Length: 270
Image (cartoon, rainbow, N blue to C red; front, side, top):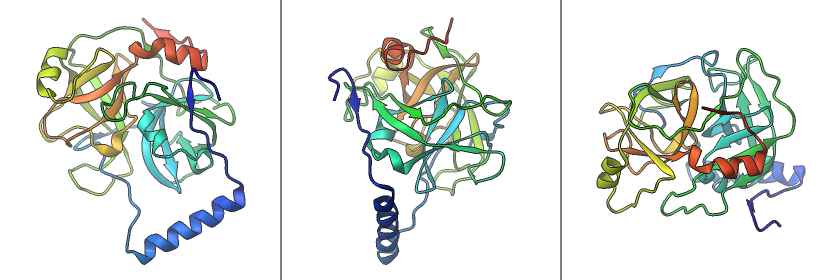
């Protein structure tokens, strides 16, 4: 165990995993529980994986639970909370290369071998909500599979910002299973702090506003905030879904040293 980083990589024998999956399915069926994805991007427009080839779907038991981004041929960037809630590395799959969540010949599945999240992550405050998955093999980059450069800039309010992710097209609706995007605006830190008086906002976070009726929701954890083709944020947590209140993202550049230290990745864009 290394003091500098918190690892939550739990290894379980394959036969144990199979047994636990079967037992979980039986128990859920007995109690009438239906496994389904949580609400995600609300009222977004459809997007193509050819335009956003860095998108990755994180799955457990075949169900999408968080978004992630390809930042190198071996590393996936996401939110720490996603990994804390799914700590068994053998139960996670990373699906890339397809616009739709449904399995198909276009997509490809990778298995992570290591889970890493920020050692100073504060679940209550949402601070340092950043995590990484290390894959079992290199992603072969194609037109539908590529990495996104990480931004080294601290952006002031802008108009041309996007959030990309998979999700429903209306509040409380069923998942569309198609990649979605919405246009948002980065807001001043002061504006965000006033809106979240009971939840102090730090410089390691960045806030956005979207049109009323659009935005992210709980299942959008890990979605990227993109400006000028570079990732500037990671969807952290949502106290409310698409209500017009500023949404909080982890600021990528604030964690540059941490990312470089854990991955060695230096593909930072100006």
